Image (cartoon, rainbow, N blue to C red; front, side):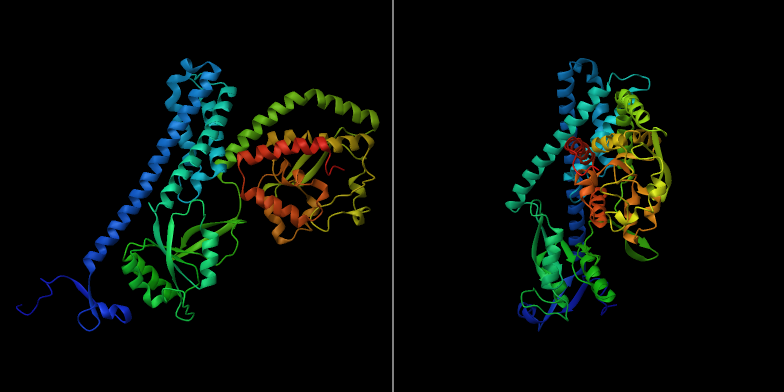
Length: 499
């Protein structure tokens, strides 16, 4: 026992050092590193990271609550109902905070400044409050008041986030709150990673440099992967970004070295441009994997979109009912046959449904499609003629003003269509689809959409139409739908691309 000092002595790991480290050691290139100190540093870094996240979320909740309260107070005073609705202020604030959480508006990264999430959450909160007002005990909220509250709170939240970003950016400019980061990869890979990952408006990272793989030395780097532990210890890093493909053993060594020091590790998967799909981290067995799936609307977004569709479609049907009658009489006066034209279309997930329109063609139009196929202005994917001989005189007016689409409001009420979305595909067109064309079937089709407001029939490249529809799906927000509806009115009045 006298010679066994391992029980009483501090737990040291003796690590061999070379190069610049050797000159700083007193015993021939050997340095002692206390494992307990390293673990304490790792735990401290983890605690600081968690505290930073908690403070960020609490601060955003507090700021949003105050902004929603201010917006509700302002609108209620304009309406002259503040004295009546004041007791329900906590309910309004809670509804907005719950909706913001439902849309992950407090998630790390750019979620807090995502206008789509803020607009969708504001719409969802207004719908929730409207539902609450329909059940006892009755809450004195009118649809007009809630619409104004939703709009005012969205503007307030958006401006509030802009103000917070401005304050945070000023702190970063002065060096406060920055996280020291290291990038692993070649010079080109590092440049591409920083270009794709970092946002110059909100960057909270200070990149100290990069390390290369042993097979690709770079004089501009801090060294190769063999220097990783030294760089981690000397520079007190908080994050490491792996921007290159590493062999499993090397990646494991990098991850363990970072975990041992409480340093976060981010790995950029080599999947190229990710704007047309969502990447979801998951696990299969013992292997961490990235699940890629097509861009699509998530459940909270679908609820908001569907609620808005039903309300707008009901209002439009009531307001346009005299127009329905006049158009029906005009169609019957010109030609024999039904007033409405119904056709099988393909919607969400490839499901067929019956789409309704005012009849604008001769009764035998579908039977003549094969005869006129050589006049199709689209190379593939859909069928359209520039000067269609099957269109009636009344049909030309209806198409010029897009009034032939009005009966599709009933499709919206039935849930087969939405006000805004990709156009529903023809059944015969599906047979001409290439694999990447089926992305447009991942959402509910719409009466109007990105194609209609960006040239309509003037755009004859089906792949270009698909690109616009993919962009719409990936970037959807309630505000984007409103913009498309407003632009649709302008396009219809101008008659752009209508035939």
